[in-house]
Length: 326
Image 1: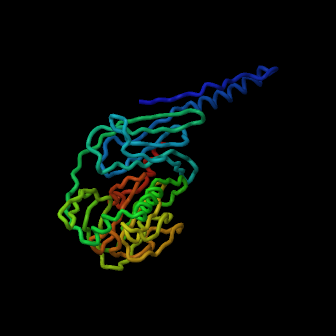
Image 2: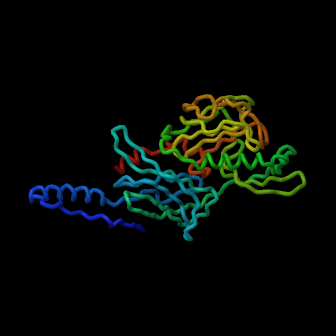
Image 3: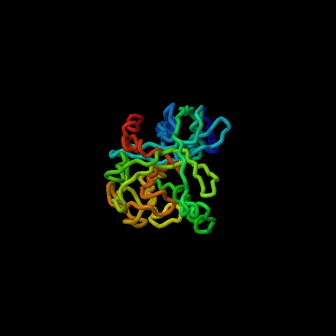
């Protein structure tokens, strides 16, 4: 379904004493402009997708401004959203695109991808249906140590401030951050997987009580102080010690697309630094709320944690598909 609001306040007319020849030429030019501007945009996205994946959404026919794409259920509730950006080919052709993260917690069923944008003075809303396929994530019970329990129970202002700071960074979207389009690389040369993306976790406290949560990334084990590298080219947005995640690095690769690296022993980069794929950013450790030496590696798209393994095999941005739509 498509909704569009037109601005009809403007009108076209010939100026006084306009000659017939001049008038016909001017109207022909204006007619061409109006015809071009009237081209209706079209919304493109896949029909089926798994929770934890990323939907590549494109708008063709005309370039739009202030593009925001959201995943909404049948009641109009928003599960995730992302700001759009413009991708240009080397020859200058351009297209609107947005990368929309699909939460791992979304139940299977029929949803809608909704695009809201502006073109001139016109407000546009485009929709298309998408079906979420059922998937089962593993469950895991973790016995908390005294150190982990202390951090978990911490209600300090520092913990709250750091949570707000991280959310603000993840909620940002720099439309010019087109650093890495291709596949990601593994942040460790050799590693052993210790926890999967999307794990449904039960934390058992020392007193026997339990708390449930969802694992947002992948846990990778390697010997302490093993080098960690950037999974893709990007701008370092954060490099600091945090109470919950220990020494932490956050890198933006595309607008609103970030990789995160937690529990590091040492930091090898600073905020604001531009790094290349495979470049050293620190060493592995067990700082913060950690069950042992490991790297928690995470990928966020529009604030939504998604499965980073997918983009070890496919590009962050499918430019071949975009070119085929132009």
